[in-house]
Image 1 (cartoon, rainbow, N blue to C red):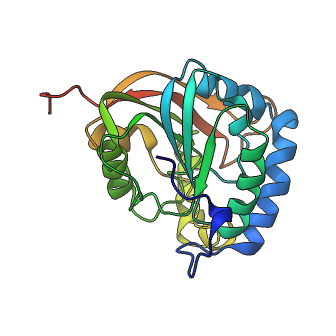
Image 2 (cartoon, rainbow, N blue to C red; image 1 turned 45 degrees about the vertical axis):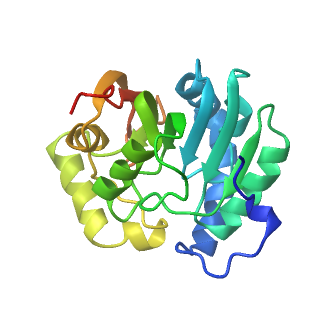
Length: 229
């Protein structure tokens, strides 16, 4: 049974409230679809998915246009009200059924083992509690189900890592909606008990100077089948 859409009722209080960042992100992300090649990354991220999918931190819904027709339903979780409104509009244009709902990664408002796949795209950098969020990913994913991820994190050698950590301790999170630059998404997935599938390092942008946000990873992980730890 589909969850309630964000547009079908009032949300009394949002757990995440970054209206200025949300407006900036909405503009920059649309530009990045062509300028940085993000549309191609989204297609690779979602290719081959099927069944019921939950997308965590859906933002303004730019992934929705790239879900393959074999996906029967997408439940898209977005805690920020301004981005959620844009995601609802994007859901109406999607070729697959998308239900946009409020919620946080650390407390997903869905039943356990209800989804065939989980999509996390540029979200682990900004969740408040990464282990708890990935514990929720594991809870809602059926045994043997897959995680598709595209995340940025630490990279670029000692000097760049020092810069990323310094920014994380000072200006970057308050200016960027809680984003952190020096997290390790691959290490976090392993620590949460997922089996890593194929993944590759990606630089964004692919050419030009390397920025603290440039070091990304695109890949797949799996919840172990029933009976495995």
